[in-house]
Length: 606
Ligand code: ADP
Ligand code: ASP
Ligand code: MG
Image (cartoon, rainbow, N blue to C red; front, side, top):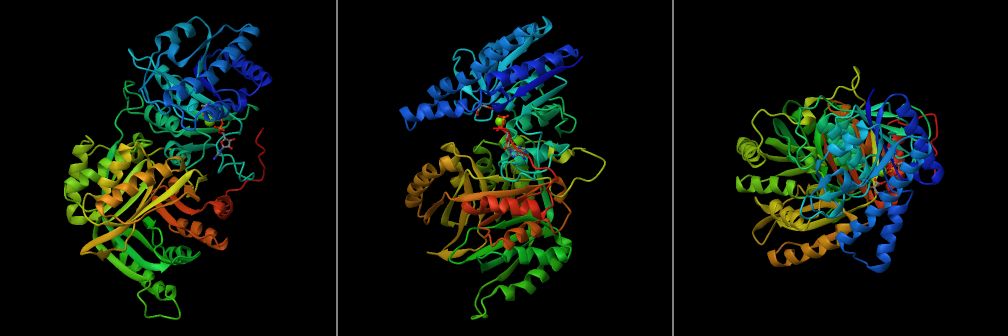
């Protein structure tokens, strides 16, 4: 006999018939000798409908009232599903988040779970009942008793958190697709079903736009080692397992708000190659990295900043022993990137930096917590360390600094984030999926909900990144890709660089307004907002030590004449910003280039 938490999403409970079908499945699982807690979403598009209603009354509704409103959707489903189970003769009881005791922070619309009471749940389970819990909602701690929600898509998070708290045998997420696919089947019907994916890979995919799982649900599964499977509520097919390494016996107190950073990592065996002023047109990155991969040079971080005039800078890091080869390739290609009419111009200059180190903070707890990157930058600034290059993923921030400053940087970061020397992050613990090595690219994701902000001519000195991202954090604005230009220009005797980053599109205008004011006060340059962007990303744990993956992605875009506006990478992902109207085409081209398509076409039920 097992204790199983099953979660059913909106489409899966979208009608009376669907609710009855869910009740049948739950009933069958109980009859097979299992205990079940069911977590449900609101029916169909109910939550969207409620958001629309609110917007008809106020363009900017009060966040407390919004949570009060949105939490009603799930409450309808729990009552109906309990009734459907009772009709089958199965004892069942519905419970709201508050009744269970899903205690969260008092942060409306994005509350994190602090603790889950298990006494009441266990009592009902032991009495042989199926407990039907409202997903997506909680209650702030004693005294306040405010109704909170966890953020859109948050029922997945409720389910995995309950599974962790009850130490359930596993958690099943039932949805409208057969499992996790290589990309969104609504955009690429040939997407292929995976049997399994590691938590680290899924965390990146989920954060980069694959909404099949809420990233915070994956984070909890990883932290607590909850076996997690995504399956279709229409069939009995086995679905996709999300695998994690053995958990470290973490406490359930402060479930979602434990340390945001698990590890401080560094690598002094790195060198940086920068190509300054390369033409801003399709195919340039493809040519450069194509040649580099033909020379079997494995690049680590790659960044391409926003264009200035009609040129870009591209920089990448390699391990020191292969620097000579990487440099030779970059130098050989540079002349062909210069304009034919003026071959002596200062275009495509190659710049090398031997004495650098990469220092990183890693941890899934930084997702949606805007202050973490800012704290890293502030810590480095206080230690007097200048940041040469920044590269971010949702679960990691890496900075390239002068090698001589590496020790100082690492020890300051360890103190700031309370990490003992030698402690390893969940990311480096390794997740055994199969005896085979993981594929270089597991999946592709598209995010159409981002906007890009750029600030021109920010003084290049320690503390600038800290100041900028500290300000954004204070305004509760989460930043995603961050890219600093390589080009440094001296204006009024001060060396200056541009810095660009992406934020959620919702936050774009606010962030621009706030930063424009600050820029005027501090003498920074222009603040530019572009909301018409798309971010397309590839994710795969096997891309480490596998030259040519980046080149193939860039080549796929070049073949479609899609210009890359920004590039950022982490060990297991590469993201490119392209024009919004080219987003879907970019996703399709990349999915095809990595031969991820299957033989079947998926039709997602309405
Ligand atoms: P639910 O209501 O069950 O929580 P969601 O709509 O939140 O369902 O998530 C399922 C949807 O996620 C699918 O219908 C699909 O369009 C989308 N999706 C995006 N990326 C992927 C992917 N890589 N694999 C599967 N589905 C994906
Ligand atoms: N009903 C909520 C939403 O639509 C939560 C969920 O479905 O996961 O976002
Ligand atoms: Mg969902």
